[in-house]
Length: 285
Image (cartoon, rainbow, N blue to C red):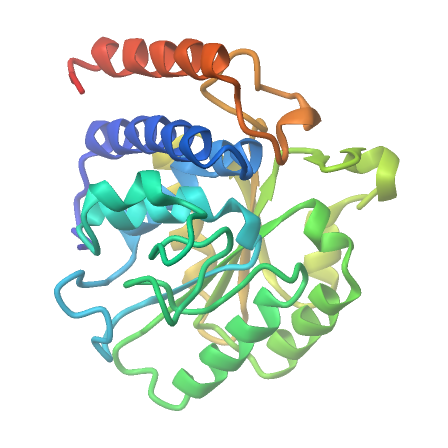
């Protein structure tokens, strides 16, 4: 799916369309995690439609890059990207969290085409990504990369830092972490629940190549990912500054939307806002 010169506007449009899908599927399920899914839309869209090598027709292609959604509760953003890419039909989106659905509340690699790893126990995804990267590392010729998306609240978990130490020690230059730094977690502001301090300095102290960017700027995300991936003997991390609930006015910056589905009226309002955003880009649903 990756192209050397990606269409910036097209990826931005995909991210907005993914937001529309996120609201629809969480509303249909009556439960789920819209806030952190919406905040990561540009990050995931950039990965799947501008950066990563992957093939929906051959999800097990050995030459593919790998993506691990460590913040597994944000599964709707991953499902929206996979449907957009063609891993499964869009009709499955509204079956989110229903019995027997391809799309469970957290990613399930046994059920969902395109899902590399079953995730959801916070703090574990980076360790899994380290293991995958270590397994690929002896064959560096094709530059297969493992990308891992974490939440900033998730980075309060000690296992994240054990994995960070492991990655640097093993010189996993084929590992890239992205921190969705939206500043909020289920109980409120990260600074109030357990302050992370300078997360960029922390990763740098562990021996990582570090950069930061606006997590809603597709070009900036792609550039940041390329910069941290250019160091062959060090893992890289992009701290992407985002807004929880981005794209839906009444959800933006509100921790209450971490794990709550919108009502019918709220869904109508949210979808109208996102439809208007698409129309402003010259795209109709």
